[in-house]
Length: 69
Image (cartoon, rainbow, N blue to C red; front, side, top):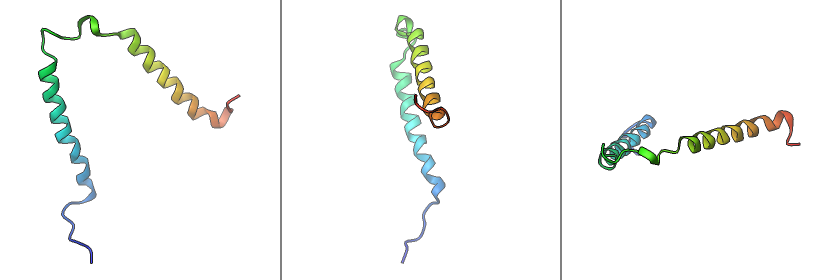
C-alpha cells in the first residue's frame, strides 16, 4: 500500500528557495561596496566565452541537418 502523499510533485521546485536565500546572503557578505568588481571584471573574456558556448550549441543543433563535414 502506498503512503499518503504529503506534497505534490510541484513541491520539488521549492528547493530553490533556501538555495537562493543562502546565495543572496553570501553575496551581500562577500561583495561589499569597497571591494566591488573593479579591475577584476574581464568583460572581453566573458563575451568570448559566451560567444564560444553559443557557437558550440548552435553547431551541435545544426549538425543533424548539415553534417559534421
